[in-house]
Length: 218
Image 1 (tube, helix red, strand yellow):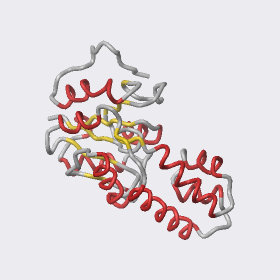
Image 2 (cartoon, rainbow, N blue to C red):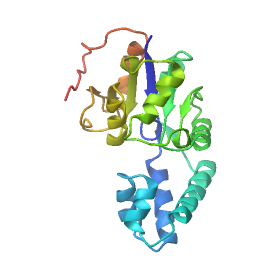
Image 3 (cartoon, rainbow, N blue to C red):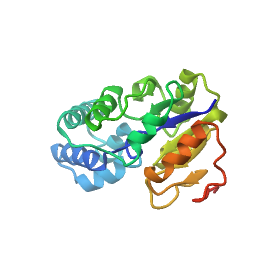
Image 4 (tube, helix red, strand yellow):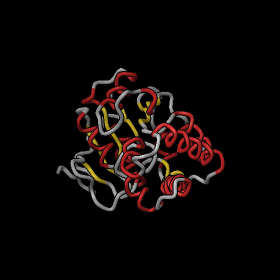
């Protein structure tokens, strides 16, 4: 049996504008440049971001404000699922897929509800693991919950940290929603929509290695 493990933000749901807005608001509250803070936040986890952009502030207070702003955004912000996301999730069999996110489960479920996406039965969030992406721990945790061997899992990601997490977990990793392939991915698709047919084929056990859009085996 094959299994599919999916990232959320940037992979299934377009949350870039929401994330930028949250970080800009957070930055304004601390008298910082929002664009610069957001550039740091894109490549680090929140506590690491605070240490770099606001080293003199209490990191727990910084985190509490960020969580408050993120929760408010889930309640009031506008979210859009990427084209193909609903078809993909509806096409996956129960017990063969999970979502793996650096966010928290209540926000993910809120975003799924706002976009009409099928809510996952298995969800590994930031609270479920001691080490987040790029550690392999989150994807290995999802595989364990599904009863899957890593070599039978396909990871769908958009960001370098998630790609590294999946690769170090010993899984097949495909990249989506990026103009250029993230280093290390086994296949690259410019959009989620173009990947849907191949992901469902993998999930059904069919060989897709000779697909017309071609693999990226860098």
